[in-house]
Image (cartoon, rainbow, N blue to C red; front, side):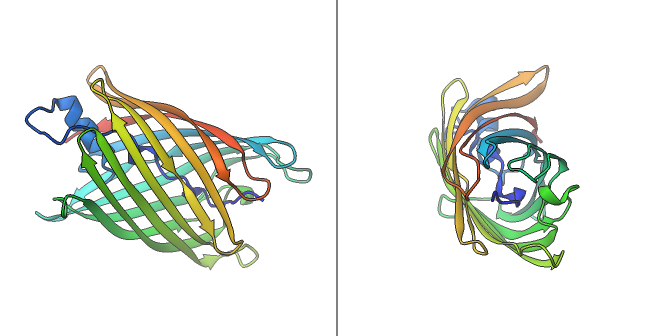
Amino acid sequence: MKQKHFWLTIPAAIAALAASLNAQEADPAADLAKQLANPVASLISVPFQANWDFGIGPKDASRFTLNVQPVIPLSLNDDLNLIIRTILPVIDAESPAPGIAHASGLGDTVQSFFFSPKKPVGGWILAIGPVALWPTATDSQLGSEKWGAGPTALALKQTGPWTCGALVNHIWSYAGADDRSDVNATFLQPFVSYITETKTTFSLNLESTYDWEREQWNVPANFVISQLFKIGGQPVQAFAGGRYYLESPEGGPEWGLRAGLTLLFPK
């Protein structure tokens, strides 16, 4: 059956944009693109990431998930930032098999707290901290009904128009409904992106998850094209792309689409 831990989807914004490291030649848009490529930059952003998955279960059902993903950075001192990243999914899931009803509502919320040095370490941007799973699902089919927590970390490097790196976390459940399966899963998201002179970005990432309870992988590969522009004075990033599941649980999706908009609030 398809996994029910919707914290597994992590923002396409992680690998959304990249820009030149030469500050003297960079224009304001390029500098903003560089910040957006860095998920632990001092940049407030609010991505709205829409995902459509198809081919689920014997009915070849579809599932729509809108991830609302605000990112709020806080300066702790001259050397350290705290970046709070939240993922709240809004879900509409068709019945994937006889006896399973259509379900709509909120999914479980995942909230990450990254502590990140303000300056790169050996050329790498690093972050580490805790991640929490909140059982906010409004329907038992849309969440795990478990409270969870664990560690999360990120490392990325920006070289010219390229950004590459990886995000990892692991969540264990520690409380919740006794009749539901425990959460014990590792998430690994390697990513790479390239930005053109027109601030169009091509991004590729894997959102790999290993469920230790069920001993199974879920590995969608996402290819996304994004564009940075302004609506009035408001900078925004629009993105769209597709995904193919290299591996998924039995009855899981086969392919999908992704599109959305990120509102940016530079300091």
